[in-house]
Length: 336
Image 1 (tube, rainbow, N blue to C red):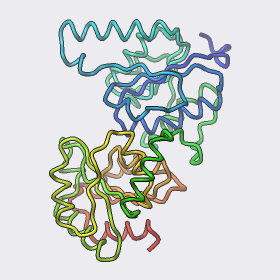
Image 2: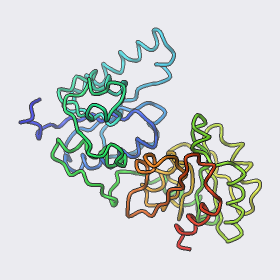
Image 3: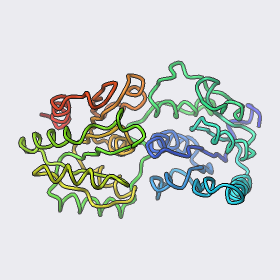
Image 4: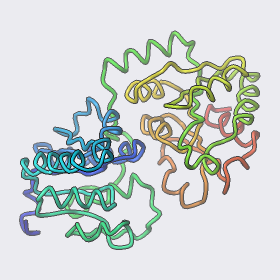
């Protein structure tokens, strides 16, 4: 496809295989694409573990799910999965790929698609040799730009508006789930604060706040009348039970799937937690958010965008953030 008929492209494949938080942050770009090309066919390539956050979203026509478990099984199963996935996406004859992932595996997916135009990031602003698989590069003036804005910039060669629209982020919660979440929130007594202490164990020392500080903070907030609900993911139940068991006025969220947790977090007046998917579930639904984060570059990339109110609780090692700082951030988000 030449640049002359670029504007007529009508079949798009978006690639963001994971993680869940990054998948959510690609949604504003997909929404812009849908608004700009309302009659286009838009598909999304994603790994199966991140796909649930996209359930019921009407901004794209279909998902192509790459099964990571099969790839990790090795040998014949991995080869069979690659062949299945390649045949599935090539059969759709996509014209344009938007590689929002920028890694080797997403570059391979872009190449396997057979799309003549493959949009990606300039060399040095991607990783693992991804630039070798794209043929139209977008160069970012600031490589540490917020990830939402980074993904939006891939729309630039299409002639579409790349500005973030906070009133139309592309995040959608199915109506039935929203109703269930609202009923649950009502029955829980409408506590104002959603909390997520968990996150990647691999990066725990740098990104997770210590349990004893969570207990101290939530006790102090409870004493000020700020009740909280603690959300948790796989392998995090014991830790979150320990926190809730030590704090009056703190509730443990029920076991949820990803879409249910997103619907529930959207009900709260404020969010406090790790720099993980739950943060982006919150602020992309307009919930004021404070989060623990590491170095400056991480905060810039991950900070919620205005007009959502937000606070970054920042230290080289997250455990160095003081309880008073976290308390003040929560009270500020709740309006004192």
